[in-house]
Image (cartoon, rainbow, N blue to C red; front, side, top):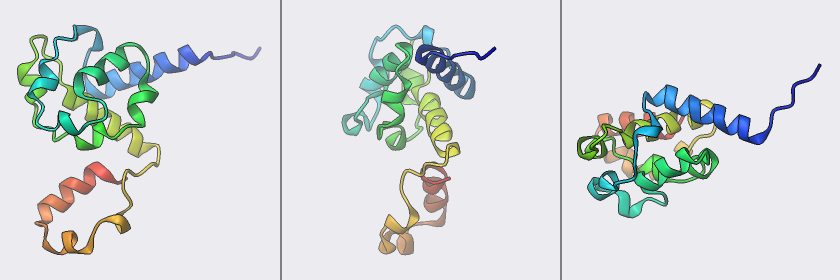
Length: 135
């Protein structure tokens, strides 16, 4: 007997995995927008924190996984400090980055980073940045 998985079952499993890796409960968010309002880089994101959470609530993880927002998140936790329900978009973005990198897809190949940046940047910045950008 062969079990056939439907797309919605696969998407649900992906959402559960995102919640497990991030430690966040997507159902807590009621879309007040405080996370996006407090985010210092939401203006540059293709999918700001509020919209990212909503897409995940709707089971549309693929729409979020293909974007650049997760790579722009600073992890400053302004989203968490402003959320009345204690949801951290930064934790969700970090989970998405981890899952993407574990799948073998690097965000930016090291060869694309300007040599001048690598020469002048503090080692800590390089280590922290590349932990987030490459597998």
